[in-house]
Length: 197
Ligand SMILES: Nc1nc2c(ncn2[C@@H]2O[C@H](COP(=O)(O)OP(=O)(O)O)[C@@H](O)[C@H]2O)c(=O)[nH]1
Ligand SMILES: [Mg+2]
Image (cartoon, rainbow, N blue to C red; front, side, top):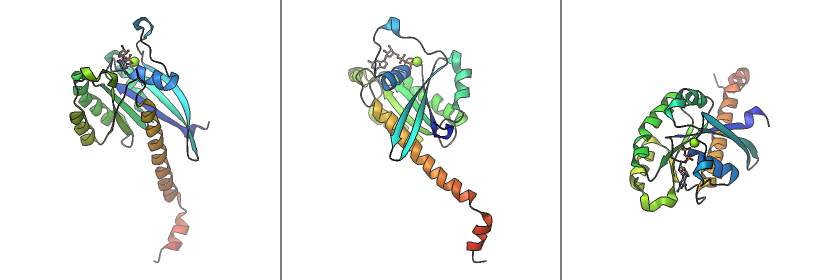
């Protein structure tokens, strides 16, 4: 597939919130329960999936990153060219919600200002252990203009929806940008002809 049809998406957030589980559920439709089989993310991991929306086919290239601060310098270099960011927190961890402020600042600092950001709460199957009230996180999302989702990788809730919705938005944004670019590229002579003075 031509390079221009590859759309880069980054999954970020604190260590242990469930980023890799989200990634594995989407790409392999699995959830690894055996702790001995869970491998902590080292730096970054990547997978691709072809997605067709209307006439447009894209390759969604998703990068799962390590939230661990030891890998921060490597991970920071991956924000370049990213069109969508999935910022994760754990609905059962108030601390992961507080850390969102730090992640939001990082997005502002490192990512393209046009990147689409989704705020994704994980571990929805653990509703009985919820520490992050829905209303509070919705207010946060609204204040930052992020779309908000809650998911469970364990029970496969809302996962496809997050990625499909992101793919759609990225395509729409790209089409809009394409129109703008073609406007800019218009022949200046023709442009002048059309003007009345
Ligand atoms: N109950 C439940 N546990 C989850 C879910 N997603 C991840 N976990 C658990 O949370 C821990 C951290 O998950 P991981 O995906 O490695 O987090 P990461 O460090 O953000 O990549 C693991 O023990 C997972 O089994 C989920 O949807 N539900
Ligand atoms: Mg991980």
